[in-house]
Amino acid sequence: MYCSQNISNENLNHLWHLAVAFPSDTRGLCPFYTCVHRFDYTGHGASEGVLAEGSIGTWKKDVLFVLDELVEGPQIMVGSSVGGWLMLLAAIARPEKTAALVGISTAADHIVMSFNSLSLEVRKEFEEKGEWTVPNKHSEDGVLKFSMNFLREAENHCVLQSPIPITCPVRLIHGLKDEDVPWHISMQVAERVLSPDVDVILRRHGQHRMSEKDDIKLMVYTIDDLIDKLTTLV
Image (cartoon, rainbow, N blue to C red; front, top):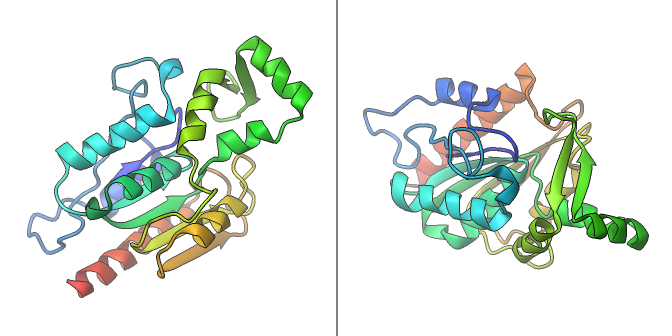
């Protein structure tokens, strides 16, 4: 099950490669993973809603709806960027539906921490405007806009302030050249999850979207290795 980045829809380069690598298992050989389940969050892609009215809580509910209503059995969840944050929130809320996690450039708490790291004067300026504008080369207009309501709501979903009650296998892949989400966030996640089975993989030349050929190969290998591990444990 794939949780995409913020402002991205489900038709991503990652998904195309994952869908090819892991087609539907019509023979039922793998009890944990039968195909790539993909979806758009509220306000994204083909889904209803307005992006500007979305929140971490709303998108968390979207992920939980997919887990509760649209898929069967425990899932290997793959989360990219903010999708990695949502993946963690979903795993906490639905441990029985979570077989393993693969985070790609995981952005847990990143939006909140980035805003709070600004000086008091700068924060007050944005608060008066009612939104925080952040340059972003991946968005159509070159910026991301976060309302104050979005930021305040997001604070309710931060996970890095205490131990993270996740005990399944966790794999975290991050690029050292990620200019959007620093790689040390993946290290923080690894330090805080309770699982004894956690690996962090750092790509020296990896960037935020991890879309190079070797990046994709690493993702596929990581997921395939988890499938083998989980199948062996059955």
